[in-house]
Image (cartoon, rainbow, N blue to C red; front, side, top):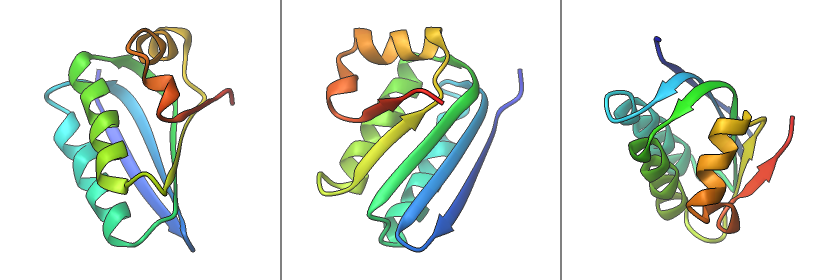
Length: 103
């Protein structure tokens, strides 16, 4: 399946929408958008994943990268995760570092 990622900056809120599969081959695109959001000084990062069908361990590491890059003062929300994606996040215990929000 293909992958697409977009970034929208509105004031101090960065919104990234992910579609497809987030794995080792697609993670660099996501990382670029995280870098852009951090560089813009976003104080909140919303990652919309309702159209993300798969999250590999490399994809999970990308979420960890987002947490580290954005800093502890930035609120990060993963919004609309499907059951397989939210399960991966919860099994890793990463739901304690971000907000996991139903759509």
